[in-house]
Image 1: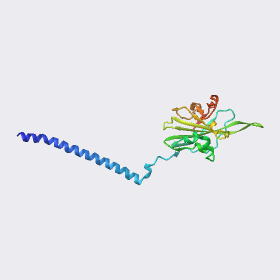
Image 2: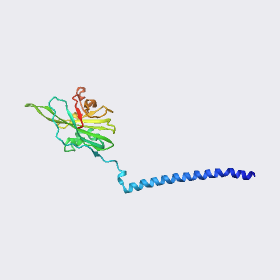
Image 3: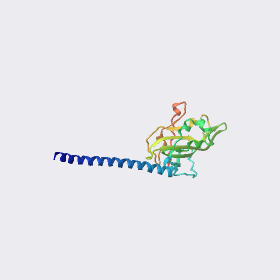
Image 4: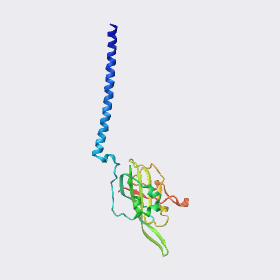
Length: 215
């Protein structure tokens, strides 16, 4: 009787051990199937293994209206790119990088990344001083901004494309403000743009301002 009772006690334990073993086998098989499926997909679709390609959303080539002399600059959206980034390595070595491209604007083009990239152009009248006096001509400020998916600003650069005096980097401004939301009607004074190369504190900050428009 005692032996029979002990055997009865061992029966649930035996079933519990079997159940635990089957559960472990099921987990191992599931993991194996998942790994096999991923490898199979990668073999037949290599794109899954590659970083997301850049996608340009709004390439605009419309001719801009020129802002009059002394008027507030208007920055018009020219390009919005997803899965992109700013090439800071080129911009931080601006003068040397400028010798490697055909046009300065190429240095401000996006590279592959994981952010949103915006490019704006402000066309405006400005004064040029030379030996014959003062001339009025058109200038173009290029402004590029990097944001996260919620349009929080992470980085920004601005440059006047007609600037020819050396060092060229003297006219390259970089935004020091982080986390501000980029939106239509945004005033670039909120970027706190500062020269990346200057010799005087009075010349370091860009106080001209300007308004960003997405349309």
